[in-house]
Length: 516
Image 1 (cartoon, helix red, strand yellow):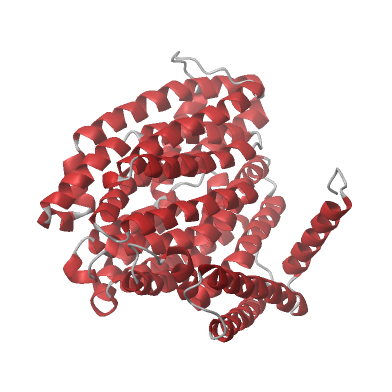
Image 2 (cartoon, rainbow, N blue to C red):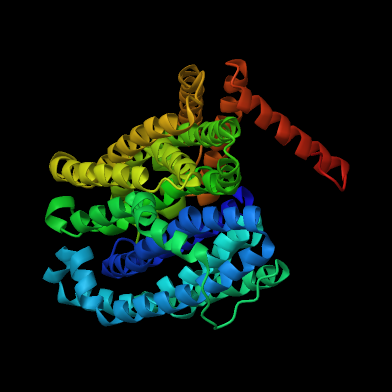
């Protein structure tokens, strides 16, 4: 999952770099970002949120306790309801596009041209919620049988379709919009054969199954519980739509900053939580609390081992990264400065955002829906209040800091709830975190020093020289982090280094099989 997610995110960076070069933080960029955010929000709330936190535990439990035949029958029963539900939502969204845009970006009403383009793109993009809803239903089925490869491959095709669409039809970002729709259908197509091999034959037949009621009862609170981050982004978008508050191009700068934050969060926060959920759901069904504690601790430490140094890396190297990857053509130095400042304050909350994914899924494994929902609601209220306070002195960066602080509130509440549910699972975590933070600071300082010294020795106008220097700084930082973490006796870093060493040795020797 991590590898394919990395491929997807690299393609996503290529896509965003092309979008930045073509549209910068212009009206077209802002219109597309808002139009795409509306179905994306609903996708994360009712699509991926449901697949990861409602579908997977019920499907996993049904398969473990009732067998494959009951599991396949439940899949058929849910399939027709998912299909009809998302079709209805898509139609409603297309018809109500003007009202939705006014809610998500109220500041756009002062610019009729911007408003009209956003509504047009929203109507093209809104069916994506239905398409991706089906995709995430398939993902939930495959994850419940521990099949993670094809579901993780889908976003790769989405990014490819968006890139092709932009090249074929650049005007008003219409090619991008139609590329999103095409990519959604491709994601459905690549998962279908795996479902057939797993024994699922979906037809347009309405059937009943007790598991449907379980999913329905779990869905609403789990959607709210898993959607606090996306709802926070929605709140940020509403504030950023007012140019008088945050300056010109605020929504586009917020989007690009968040995209850089998404790479480590998707690679290790979301992927680790998603991969651990079926295992914890099975362990919870068996009432094996020691096993749940072990799985939760492993997933949390593994996520934080990458999230903490990634956070420091984005803070230290945020400017050279964005300058190298985005600053060209329509993406000006001013846009770079605004995006970097926003990214750095987003990065403050990266570890909390990753922890939330793991901790919430631990509670979902026990079918505890209300605790994450209450925690998410409190964090969302905190985000709105903090936005209202911080946007005045810090402008756009204040919105990012508010998201980071509200994520921290959410993670602390979920951590306490998990401890109450399964007992203490974090023995030595505080000492472990201190060592990881020390290693991360050393990594960030070394990477920043290499960049500053090297930048004086190259020609800043030569992109290849700048990119090579940035790559050297990043690789030096990663290597130094692993070295420092091993010296500080961070066990997971030692295991990761050993894993990488084994894979490299096997690659060089040409062996066919990996060790277990």
